[in-house]
Length: 137
Image 1 (cartoon, rainbow, N blue to C red):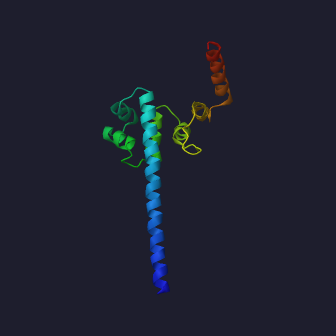
Image 2 (image 1 turned 135 degrees about the vertical axis):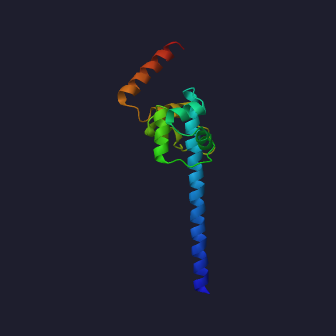
Image 3 (image 1 turned 180 degrees about the horizontal axis):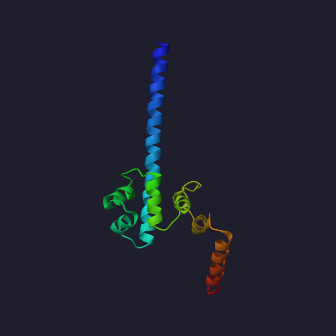
């Protein structure tokens, strides 16, 4: 009886593990799809134009954006190259940020998230631009 219960518990654990992996992959691919759509639209590209630049099938872009397909790192690299964004910048964009309760991410947090990974000189340039913009307010 005990061996049968342990076997059932082991099967339950295995099934739970598989489902957690499926859910995790789904969440990650949804974020990847949102990131692809964000950068594609930011650059004013259609799905067809991006597919042409990345040299991949047009329908694949839409499926990735809708999280209907899983993307390899090699494929993602082709897409980020076509979007002229580094993989590290792409992952920083899609990286989930921690939130307290149900509070929205503030504009300041969005700015900080965008500046992460920029060089110090790039950050200083952005700071100078902010100073110039704030002078007019």
